[in-house]
Amino acid sequence: MPAAGSGLRFAADLPKQYLPLAGRTIIECALQPFLADGRCVQLVVALAAGDARFAQLPAAGNPRVSVVTGGAQRSDSVLAALLSIAAADDEWVLVHDAARPCVTRAEIDALLAAAKMDPVGALLAQPLADTLKRGAADGRVRETPARDALWRAQTPQAFRLGPLRTALTAARAAGRVPTDEAQAMEWQGQLPLLVSGSALNLKITEVTDLALAAMVLAQRGASP
Image 1 (cartoon, rainbow, N blue to C red):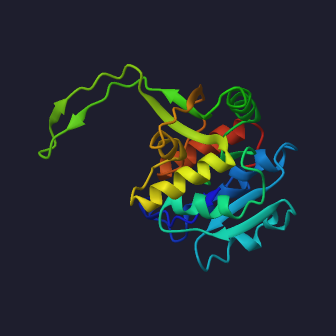
Image 2: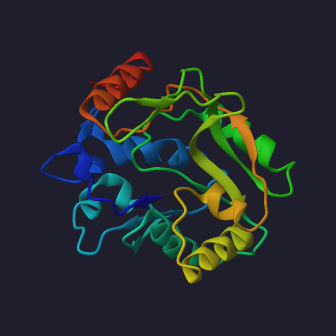
């Protein structure tokens, strides 16, 4: 779980993953489905250098949870976490955003079921329903791209440890910065499988997203 970002777009006085949500913090909500899943034998959280907040959370005391120092880019943090894992190259790893607190066990089950049958791996994603506009420098519409076959990538994303580690290492060596793990695999000529996810698996980037996440979790019985 990459969690080394500062959350500058959120304009809070602390990294957004530590903001309160449903009686916990955002990152605790994001970790919870995996802590509750016995198939998950190890959780690695990549933190910013000097981050002392995570150690104060109850989740930090779980024996399956370890931490590493992340990097300037998401891909650097994910690679640091992968390099800390002592496992066979064909073991499955899931990468999940610390700012996605609403993923469900059912979505994780669907992802794993699809991934284990695929030679590359898979990611949760959602087909785009909105009409897209490409803007010009003057703020006007330049064109309306076709939305056919376009998906909004989500997490978790599931790949085998060795190939994903190789893909991220190769991207760094080439000076390329993938925006997610699937893109790093694509640069290796691999085509990950898209697994339809839910719009409720939202990523918190703005204050309104936090309010929506609180409503989703409250509907599932979480404390306000």
